[in-house]
Amino acid sequence: MTRMSVWRWVASHPVLRDIALTCVVVAGGVAGELSGMRGQTDGALTTRDVVALAVVVVAVSTRRLRPALNLVGTAVAALAMVLATGVLQPVLVVTLGVLTYTTTAATGRRSGVLLAAPIAVGLYVVDTFVDTSSPWSPRSFAVLAGIAAAAAAGDAVRSRRAYVAEVEERARRAEHTREEEAARRVAEERVRIARDLHDVVAHHIAVINVQAGAASHVLVRHPDQARRALTHIRDACGTVLSELASIVGVLRENNDHDREPVRGLAALTTMIDSLAATGLTVERRQAGEARDLPAVVDLAAYRILQEALTNAHKYGTGTACVTITYTEDSLVLDVVNAIAVDRAPVTSGYGILGMTERAATAGGTLDATARPDGRFAVHAELPAPTQKATT
Image 1 (cartoon, rainbow, N blue to C red):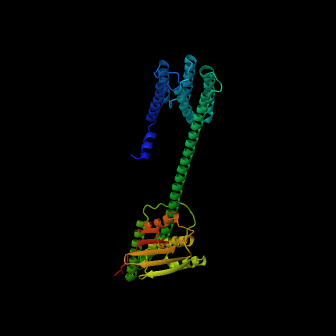
Image 2 (cartoon, rainbow, N blue to C red):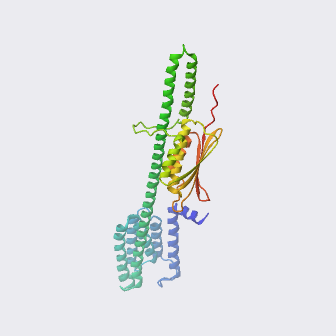
Image 3 (cartoon, rainbow, N blue to C red):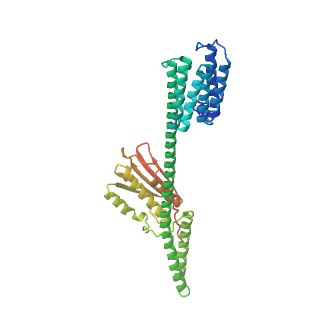
């Protein structure tokens, strides 16, 4: 296990940490008493020492249960032992420091100070007049300083935990808001796509209605005209079915917003001219013979080129190259522009989400990437099989 994983495992088991801390404090107290470092022992544990160690075990191992009550109880036990034996046990002072830290970190600065201050003063007074017999004893001042330092450390840890929790909460709210905004933008784009496609489908239904009416009038006297009308109806029905299949699952809000006129590649020249007026120079190339496209593909291609050229204007150096390739089975769009040094493009923004949705609605795919050579490329492939002539 790595050091970080060990630390995380230890942090997730507070009871084990308390047991380990208890063992460390008890071991230190036992070592101090056996070594006779205070000059008042003969290097053996007395009943007083055993009682003090028992208090330490109970206090430190249960310090998280009720820290304030635990601190007060341990302070009372330490003062009682000083008054009864005339000696302030160092191990109890260390324990009071640990409990002061725990209480301040758990309850807050005010509660910690209100508890730690009288305990520290009480220990100082008792130790001064019972054990050391001097108000200027360095050990008595060390007791005061130790309790104060423990309270300050606990308050610092509490403040840091509160700060980290607030930062994490802000990050969570920001992430939630960002996801909601992205979902809202995608939903709006789908609604706009559905609105455009509704107009296309409505157009073909109107054609079917007109041709059906004409066929009913000429069916008896002019069967050839009726046959042509029925052929148009069949073609229009096939187109409508294809486009309806492409918008399955796209939800449309029931609202009365103004509808934008349906666009297509026929309006590409006008769009390029308008972008040229804003300072973007577009080089247009075409491979393959242009042909009539399904309305959904024509509309998606126009929208994709519109968004890609808009991004090229915003993040590029003022030039872009558009290549439209007609193959037997598809329409391929490529938009390439140099990236301005001070305007790096965002490779996962709402504009790219919109283009991806447009391509998916038409049954195609889209890829937008920043190339190593400093250029940004949008590549889309939309299915557009060549229609065979009707015999």
